[in-house]
Length: 384
Ligand SMILES: *Cc1c(COP(=O)(O)O)cnc(C)c1O
Image 1: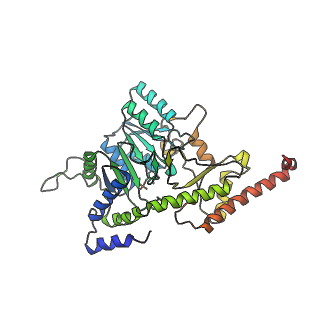
Image 2: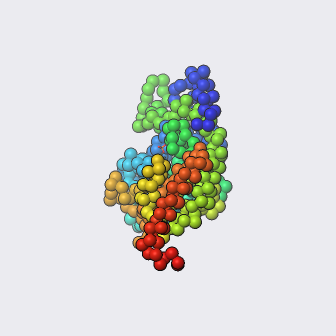
Image 3: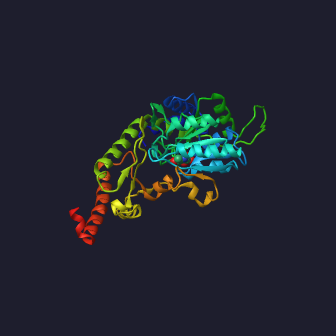
């Protein structure tokens, strides 16, 4: 928390606006829309709910296909299943770690041949990094398929100066506890299409028709954000820029102190973008490093430092067994490689320099031990 959240919560209590909806919700929606430069926004109970609403608005139904990146959190794809639709997974490319335009074209071409074009393409900006939006938007426009931009992890990121989350028909943000700003739980759906957001508002509040009694013609959801939590969000939004700077500094510090280690590569920053560096992530080339991701995670864990592996690709999950998947290139599965070699370092905006140093020291020790072990096993190597 930033310290100012209670002001908004107290205000909600004082005015007795405890229900879902209320002045904080309205203001939070306007403030987010203005911040990212979208015409309209609706605050909802989670990022997942926002994706689900977007799919509903695009009329994704049973049997429809939806393209989705392979390398993402399951929440990007679960709403596809809620609609009874079929996800088709698209591999990553190495410059952004996000959706590979090459794999996307291949998926589109095959789908067009089969007469099974997807109803929507979900694009994810992983760990705060924008996907290659110019290329992806061009391809999707060519096939006339709308984009839902899952910017759950990339609020505060820009691509060519434009806010992440504003490149598709719909954009979604998450305010879950682990995201760069939080309402403890919450999300936002944004769009330039005010009519669609109006419809989202209707669907998200049980789809109640205009009538003097309770009248319902279509199925709705209970997805609205509470006025209390929206208050937390308003205060959080005020410190977003600070948090982006803090996370970028944490990245710089890790980079400065670890990039010289053999076999380590940090997630790059895509050209013409400014990522929020939600999480500092890197990959380890086991052969060069003499250390595996698993060993490193275990060593950090022993020091009570919580690090995480990179998301396990969805096409490898039992839940999505049998779903279509398109690789970046033949025999080049980028998402899978990022998963087996990737690691996310502690990156909280409030991480102190001492805490960062502990992480750095622990990682350097693991590498040092590996190097001394190797020079013991292969003494000749030391001279090389
Ligand atoms: C967190 C997250 C979501 C879901 O957001 P919730 O608010 O937790 O429902 C969706 N997609 C990605 C990529 C996420 O990281």
